[in-house]
Amino acid sequence: MEGSNQVVKHIVIVKFKEEVSPERKEQLIRGFANLVSLIKPMKAFHWGTNVSAENLHQGFTHVFESTFENVEGIAEYVAHPAHVEFANVLLPTLDKVIAIDYKPSPVVDLDFHMSN
Amino acid sequence: MEGSNQVVKHIVIVKFKEEVSPERKEQLIRGFANLVSLIKPMKAFHWGTNVSAENLHQGFTHVFESTFENVEGIAEYVAHPAHVEFANVLLPTLDKVIAIDYKPSPVVDLDFHMSN
Image (tube, rainbow over all chains, first blue to last red; front, top):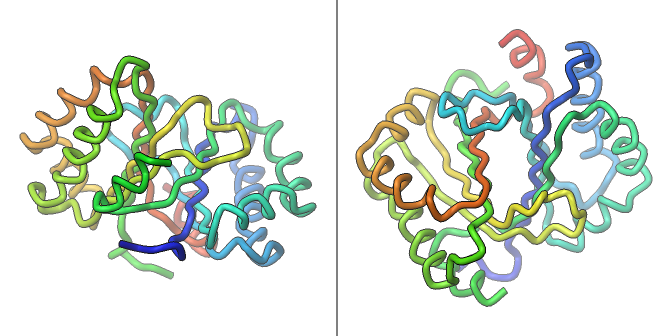
């Protein structure tokens, strides 16, 4: 059991619009990463491009993974002016986006999840 | 820098079909988790249900996150009979699925990613 101090992962999966240049993508990725230094409850940031060979990626090309101490931390992040400003810049460059949050648990926590 | 021993994350995001019961979902989640004990290159498995309040989850409800030592390990996993058997059971229960793999990097590895 991981208890109540379990982290929450915030996963954002995107496909940029065709016209967004590599330089612009790089700028945006640095902007996303920079939020860690601006928004206290955001504890970590990692990202990567799709390297899947399974062909189930539905055209998505980038994964952005942020770590928070709890769901309240994500709410604080979402409402933070630095995030709002960045999201207003990022979203118009995206063709598709999914953002999903979850508490990563091994299967032993299944009962907890099923009741939530 | 994380070097060449960097792990690869295999993220599967799903929405189950409406008719799939909670008991069936539980069974499938245990089946997914059980692959860790059957497929050697699969080093870790975590999962969680969507707890996002942002409303960008596009109807997806579950995240399954597996960790591998490298992309060759994912290829071995994808081709492994235990995975093939499980996928053949899981996929018909899904309304939507995205599977995407990435090498989680802090932004300092940006140049590496942009050239790949």
